Length: 392
Image (cartoon, rainbow, N blue to C red; front, side, top):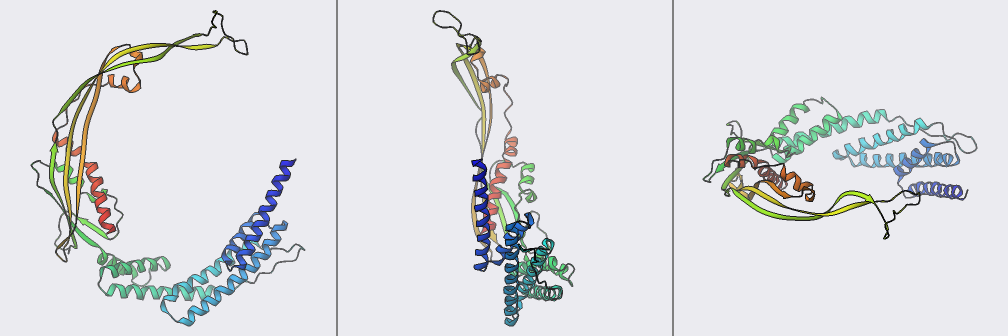
C-alpha cells in the first residue's frame, strides 16, 4: 500500500512539474516547446484534469506563436532583402504546421465542459506566393554564382540548385544548370604510380591501388583519373612513388616449450579425515575433482617472412605548377605460420597449443604474393592520406 502511495505521489509531482515547465516555456517566449509539450500530453489523455490545463496552455502558446511569427514576417518583408525569402516562407510553413498539429486534438474542453476555442487561419495563399518568391531567389542566386566561373562559386550554385529542386522540382532549366554547376565545381585529379625500386610491382596490385571507386572517400567535389583524357583540364596531380620494397629472408624459428600443469582428471566422492563420505544438506554425497600434475614438451616451429613497402605521395597544383604537399607512406606485411609437435601427456595442452598440433609447414609465399597480400594495408594508408588532403 505504501509503495502505491509513493508511486502516486511521484506521478503527481512529475505531472505538476511538467505543467510548470510548459508554463515557464510560455513565459520565456519559447512557444514551440510549450506547444510540443502540450500536444504530447493531450495526445495521451485530453480528458483528465491535466488535459484541461494543457488545452488552455496549448491555446495560449499557439496564439502567442502565431502573433510572434506574423510580427517577424512583417519585419522581414519591410526589410525588402532578397535573402529574406527563405525565412518568410519557412515561417508560414511553421504556422501551418502548428495548426495541423492542433486540429486532430479538437474538440478540447475546459474543466467545466465548455469548449476551448482556437482561431485558425488559411495561410495557403501566402505559402504558395512565398514559395514562388523563394524559388525565384534561389534560381537567381544560383545563376549569379554559376556565371562567375569560379569553382567555389560553382559549388555554391550547385547547392542552391539542389535546394531549388527539393523545393520545386523541374523549375525552369534548373536541372541542366545544376549539372553544369557540378561539372564546373569538380577538382579533376590525375593519379600516377611510379616504381623507383628494384622490385616488380604486380599488375594486380597496381590495378587495385588505382581503383579509386573502392576507397569510399565520400568526396563530392573530387574526381580521380588514372588514365589522362585530352578533353579534361586537370587541377591537381597525385604521384604515388614507391621508393623501397624490402623482403626479409625466409625465417624458420624452432623452440622447445616445457609444459607442466595441474589438470582435472575425473572426480570422486569427497571424504573426511577418517575416510567417511561427506554428505550435503539433502543427504547426497559431495563430489570433488581429481587433480593431477601432467607434463610434456611442445616443439613449436614458426615460419615467417616480411615485406616492407616505402612510398611517398606527392600532391601538385597544376594551375600554379607547384608541389603543395608530400606524405610518407609505409606498410609492413608479415607472413607467419605456426605449427608444432608434442611429446608427453596431451592433457597438459591448452586449446591454442592443441590447435598448433593440427597444423603443418606450408610453402613460403613468393615476393609477388607478399606484395599482393600487402595491398589492403597500403590502400588503407593511402586512403588516410587522401582524406587528410581533402580536409586541407
